[in-house]
Length: 121
Image 1: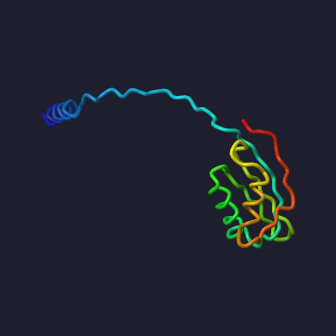
Image 2: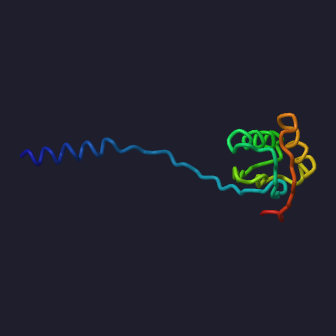
Image 3: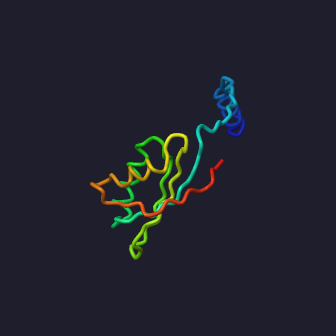
């Protein structure tokens, strides 16, 4: 008798919890690349740490609105530090990028080499 009551209760419970969920429509969108994605490798002097100096350079470049990513490869044993900057070549040129970096902290940093890479798509 218990089993029958339990089965009836369980069946009632499961049926009463059933809800008619609204149908959700999914809209497919396409991703469109805006601008030109380019990269440049930089060698910079004047950096004494990755966290402070690297962050100062990263913030200045990202603030320009033309740079999407800055990778800092800091080696304390090297005189020049390597950076890889992802940027929109239609919005900023390499001279402007160099000027931005060299204007940080009253000229603390000096760009000693710029090596543009091919466009990334």
